[in-house]
Image 1 (cartoon, rainbow, N blue to C red):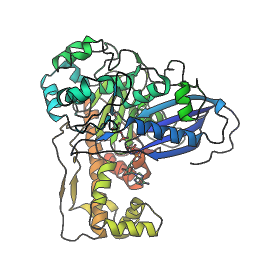
Image 2: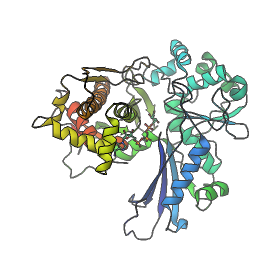
Image 3: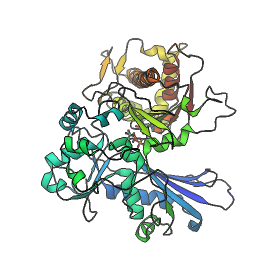
Image 4: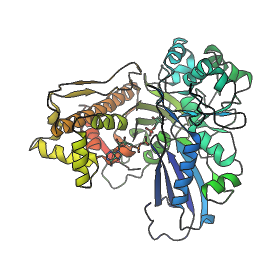
Length: 490
Ligand SMILES: Nc1ncnc2c1ncn2[C@@H]1O[C@H](COP(=O)(O)OP(=O)(O)O)[C@@H](O)[C@H]1O
Ligand SMILES: O=C(CO)[C@H](O)[C@H](O)COP(=O)(O)O
């Protein structure tokens, strides 16, 4: 936990961010100044290939740990509000709100199908074959990472142990706000972006009937949400006494309707005050900015005044992130996870770990300085002229929207020393940056006009990742001089 500066007594706000690997809390004052930060890892299970599960009780317990840490030493009666964001994973509870197993083993601790779970491949193919009009708002092709295919998988595979007993299917952000307030209303952000809900027309009965989930229509969508609130709206009577006890806060504190994690990151950086930094976007509309939230995955959030349909890019989603604006969301399903995978799986990783530990550095800081050594006088990018990575190890989310794609490395040699590891790491980072460039090109071809990238999330702590994004997206020959990379670390 980082102690805060010498703030005057005033109002405090607590934000809780649930990522794929950990839960983070921040305490800020009324000016948005960060006073304290804490994080806590969360459990993940991978019972079989492409099945990824978590526990809603474990995640709630982690939310409580980090919240208690950030409010230590302050007058909790001065806390004016609490908000959650989280990954867009699917939480399943029974009619009494108890966890239900989403697995064949019947382990009810594991009641979350994570966002990156690809178990529902046959289901999503069938959904896409319907060519239903709701698919126009997800780039033309529904992703296996969205909720409809996962729900259909549960109905077809765990009928008795899960589907028939289920009373509530929540997106993880909405689960957290329910847990805090007892209010089952869903956020417009999660329903529009992951559940095919339209901000203007509501649910489309014909879609759910066509894909075989007519059950939801019959009970007026009570299990997936029939009360929808804009992100930030105040929920019910605020924090319940039970949740207040869990979190170490007074009951009644206002709790905001939540956001998906990428959308919270997008909201946080896209409106940044950039005056005085000489950036290309100074004086330009916010629609010229692209937020890239890069952690386990990368999400590319661009906004527009009018709807823009970008093939292979999710959206346009109205008011799902910034009120009154349409959102397009491009994405790469594994970026931080891919870099970790490549580095940790290399034969020289034990040597890297030992050398980085001896210098009290992260393995990435060590690799970056090692690349600086071996590049000699040449720009670092030239180290990979004959080594190339195709980064779609977990399919391609955007703009190819093809979950069957796989990863590839060309240019391998027999040596497996630290130099090879460093160069493979560089080629992976470059491949991810080229993926971002493809997404930007697709968005621009459809009508977006983007001049500045704003990066946040764990990967933005890596200067090489940021530099490669600036170099590779800036070199597209169109507006080479005006591209900028901005970093906001979260
Ligand atoms: N200090 C660091 N230097 C370089 N990369 C980092 C650093 N810390 C985290 N990362 C990268 O960021 C990723 C995790 O980002 P994070 O935002 O914490 O993820 P999530 O929100 O999905 O839990 C890791 O997979 C790792 O590759
Ligand atoms: O689909 C997404 C947002 O719409 C994200 O990829 C998902 O929520 C996971 O985020 P993170 O990589 O930050 O853990």
